[in-house]
Image 1 (cartoon, one colour):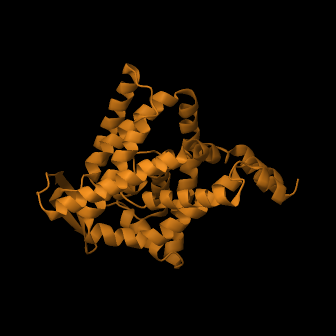
Image 2: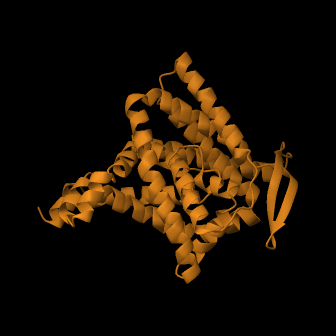
Image 3: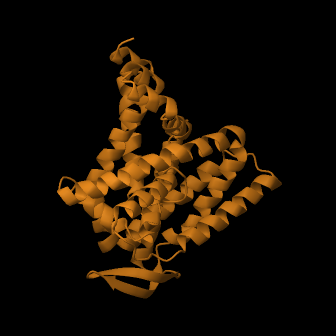
Length: 313
């Protein structure tokens, strides 16, 4: 079997229309992953490709590495879900490289409106995910546990951390695991680890020597993390699907603490000329025109997610 036949035989879209749909689902995942508080795993779940994503990542196993080491390219391509992963990753990469600058501008200049849209997106995602679970007392316990984990993780204080290669590898491992979990944002964990601005700054100028080193170290960590964690997640989804979904629904619910649009800043710190928020408190909004706009953005985001779920079905 030649390379082309091996590639076409792997799991993934079989028509150009399906390939285009998968690409734009990847774009949506990449856009979500760049946002602190929103998870690309959430998008994959509501777009109906979450299990395919986990299985595709899981196919990058030791057997695949052995085939590659023996230069058995046809065997490697046939073993790995390459068709699915290449198209999806192309969409994710497109979004990350193009959306990073826009997300910076929105979060810095229109934070309340931006977080309102994110809040509506996550709220709708919670509803969609909860409909996939046949609830029992045990699964409600999983939901509560997930909610507590999400609530306390997103409440952690961002800190200043080293910029050495080993710490960037560690950040890649941690962030990528969160990026495929609905509810826990890899971008937010980067913020907690003090590396969100550092990594996204490299993505804004990806071809400079310094940026290439940062991206390479982070990418190595991401590959190490995702190939190991995907096996755990795949096992849970195949053996304890309902409980795992209940736990993930809780994670998303707990994460709403971070995404609440209206906040008072309690403590900041200036690091290398930039102001970072250390502590903030959620507050109730004032009844004005801005509130009406925020509620409208929440509604639009909610409708978009529900529409996406309907299309996925």
